[in-house]
Length: 130
Image (cartoon, rainbow, N blue to C red; front, top):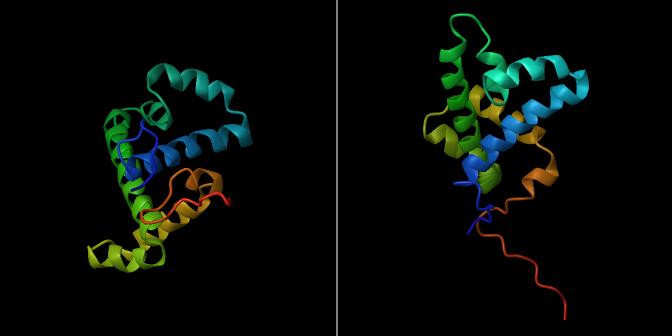
């Protein structure tokens, strides 16, 4: 059984949240985007706050953006659980090779400490030496 904190519905939800939070935090650290954060936070949470500011198409794009994070999280969950065989399995279900490679690159960019928060199915926790 996969070990996922109670706040996550499944492993895909965990990785979707990790991607979203990683993409929110990384640019702020690099650019110090305090002004953008202050304006955008009033409109919507997270990355969607910036997207929602786009005239005319912003609100519709937020839904698409949220769906993208959900899909990316689900694919990352497969990559995390299945490992090396994941690419072939994703190809078998009809996912495009470029999409798989893009998801793999995003998964690889997640810090190891975040990935270690969720143990892949079938792993046995180490037992302390007596």
